[in-house]
Image 1 (cartoon, helix red, strand yellow):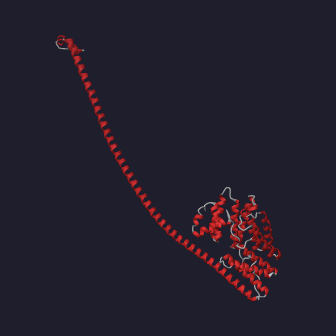
Image 2 (cartoon, rainbow, N blue to C red):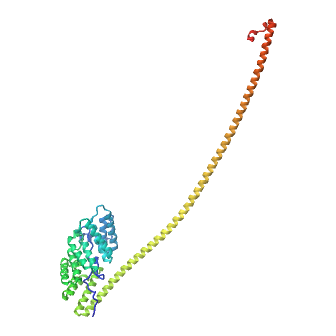
Image 3 (cartoon, rainbow, N blue to C red):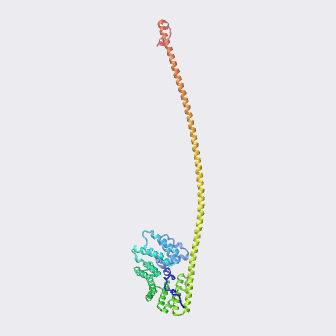
Length: 440
């Protein structure tokens, strides 16, 4: 019986195998891992997300929100809050470098999980640049480990080794590096994967044993280490140890139905199928290969369900956007209609005001004309009266002058006659009363 050679479970970095976030939990921003998990559990069990996200306007609030959704597997929401946190951190004049590096690490983890390797590399390089510029390269252990994981995915094992060697710059302390999984355990696992892919099986066994020793049976990664170690044992021909570890891993993950554990179960089934195929037990080899295919179908259905859900969400979003657009068009039409109505109202009002103003101006002009005519007539009457007075005055003066001249002539004749009479008959004049006074 011939089985496919790529059904090994020891390569969780393969494009067909678990990605980074299936292997690692997100970095904890503050406090212990237990505190954050209890907070997230309380939040989601009670359904009061707002209580936890009430400080989401701050960098730390946004970061905690992203971490909570990351833990719950809501990658879209986690990415949204992580990006908001990075935007908030960029606005800070004194950015919290350590926390920003943690966010970059978690974002790159999610991107590697969904096979967006270019964007993951971009965030990892930004984290390295930030750490070096701030002189805190010791905080980059998780970043270098993600870069080594990226290089393993791309089958660039020399580069993976280069970054794994640089991880020694960081601290193995959970709080210092911002890594939930102790750095040493993660380091050993990555070294084991590199050694296994470069056919250094004994070294891979040593590293996987060390990683298994650093983990606890209750941890989820314990099953991964068992599976990886059994892969190395199969490659080394130690089928007994491989089978023992595989059944132990299968027992640990069997009760769960989480996606990441279904992926691990698929890897374990693949290793069991290879193991029995190597032992010539084709019945069990086919049995586990069938379970492998069925698990792969389950994962495929889950993935399809997620895709359908995403498409449905996008469809609803598009429909909602379309509805909003239609409403906007109707609203715009109503606004345009109202604007036209207002335009005509303003136009007619303006025209009416202009007509009224023109009428007022016309009345005022007519009034001024009438006043000017009246004033002109009055002035004419005054001029006429003045002319009459002047003529009368002239006539009076003429008459007065004429009377004056005639009287003076008469007086002169009387005076002259009286002079002659005085000379000829003085005694007569003496008999006239007031003669002397009249003479004078």
